[in-house]
Amino acid sequence: MSYRELLTELENSADEKYRTFHKKLLKNDEVKLIGVRIPQLRKIAKKYIDCVDELMTYPDEYYEVTFIKLTVVSCLKYESFVLYVDKCVSLIDNWATCDCFEAKCIVKHKEEFLPYILKYAQTDGEYYQRFALVTLLHFYVSEEYAETIFSLSESCDKSRYYVHMAVAWLIAEMLVKHYDIAKSFLLEHSLDKKTHNKAIQKACESFRLSDERKNYLKGIKR
Image (cartoon, rainbow, N blue to C red):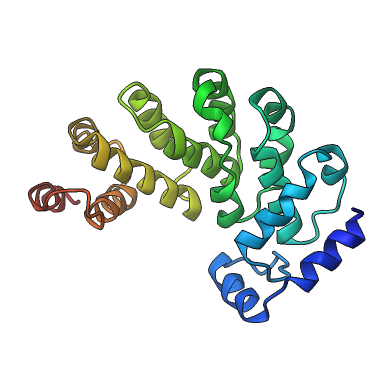
């Protein structure tokens, strides 16, 4: 399938109401959308599993094309995935593409992939850092990686909105799954006030925390 053929298939699958809705959610006027829903994008992506190199040469003119690239790469075996991951992360320019770039192969290669996370977390780019944090959220929320999670939560540039929100989301998930460890981290006041309070807010929105714990967390807001 050529790039023109891919665009034609995407255009034939477009939904104008969805395009308008999703455009508002992305909050980035520079992102061009055709308006294809995610289940259909994933269906189209399956056609490219065996021709990744060709796909990666296509222009990143539209959100949907980049989404398909990252979806295909995320389906590769780990040894192949890491050959493309740097390029893929460099293409991310919105939160939705970032958060959906979830490679299941990392599950069995967490230690091997950790240097990539550290590298992206230290890169001066909002979506590099968000990808690092969201990948921790997807695969590393455990006591074993708590120190890494807290360290990167402290060092990432939380003045950037999507980094700030990713840190809050990540710490909230740690509160849900490893409450005592995450609570101790919050009590150290290592986070800025805004992110500290947002993490507590997001944790308290979860049905997985008891009312007792929610009330305690609300009491340590700053």
